[in-house]
Image 1 (cartoon, rainbow, N blue to C red):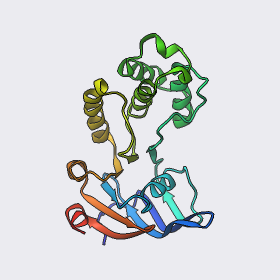
Image 2: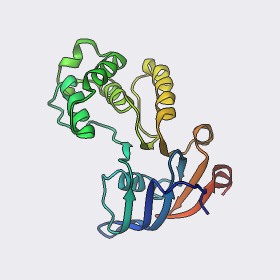
Image 3: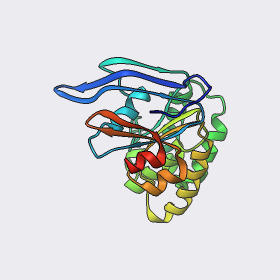
Length: 220
């Protein structure tokens, strides 16, 4: 079962499978996602949730099957910068923007928002490799939650830095999620899923074993 919509699918997975050597992380997964849906991705550790999010985000390619997306799926999955740690904070911000957008239109406003929110002061000019873990997490969080996206794949396990940063991060995260057109959220936290999601996918051993309304998915 899946939720119904009169709109064409925004994302469509057709019997996709993913292998890592002898390990089959996903097995014949099929699902469609529609504009504006907020979908919980649930299951035990190792069930295939993170692999699925990475695949629909383009980080992984399927071993078999077909995945179609009408818009880019923005991954809020990485726990660290995918650019060189030799770059300064400002250079890392610019590199991320170019990787996502392919150009610098709108970059100045993006950079100002990130710098102000991260609150790193003069450290923003130093190489990211010199940052503490908390400083790096704050900058990465600010980068990933600046702007809005047509479709977002998010792993709740993503961190937001030190305790002093936590409250501001929670407020920013809520605003960010509310601006995402379509959201797929992997989480073990029932309260978080109930707060944002209306549909639930339950993964088990690399397969989707339930797809339906959130309360029914949670009960399952």
